[in-house]
Length: 227
Image (cartoon, rainbow, N blue to C red; front, side, top):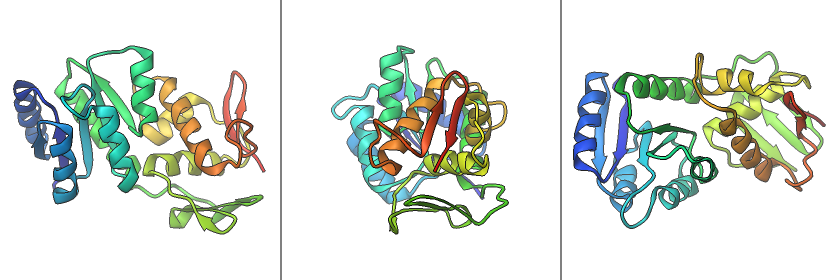
C-alpha cells in the first residue's frame, strides 16, 4: 500500500526537491505552501505522516502542529533549519513526534518516516493484556488508556512510550532503549525527544504532572512506571 505524506513547506524549490525524492522512495506526496493550506489538505487527504516546516508564513509550524494535535494523532515530523535547543523542544512540546534539520538528506528522511510509521502502526509485543496502576489502566492490546475509568487521548507515539514502560514491569528503561523501541531501530536521535514526550505524557496521565507518581524518573538512568 502506498503511504501518503503531507509536505507543508513554503519554499517552492525545497518542496519540489522533497516531493521528487519522496516519490522516488514510493510515497504519494500532497503539498501545501503554508499552514492554513496544510490543515485543509490534512482533512481532505488523511495522510499517514505530516512533514511540517517550522518557519512558515502566517501560522508557523508550532501553531499548525498544535492545531493538528487537537483533532488527530497522525505522526508529525517537524523540519527546522535550526538546531537551537529551544526551538527543537518547543516543536516537540507542540506535539511533533520527531524532528529533522535542514539541509535534508532524502534517504535519511525516508528512513525516519518508515521507522516512525512502523512504530506508529505496529502493535506492541505484549506479554500481558493490561496493566493497572492505581487509578490508571493501560489496555495494551486495545491501545486504550483509562484514568478513573475515563479514556485518555494519547498520540500513537505517546501510547507506544507508555506501553514500553508498562512492559518493562517496573524496571528502568534508559533513554537509549526508549529511542530504539519507540522511534525505531538504529534511530539517530537525541534524548530530548524522550524527555519532552515524557513531560507531555505526564500532563495526560498524572493528576499532578509536577509530582508524578506513575511515570517516574530514575535519575541518571531513565524512566520507569510505578504504582
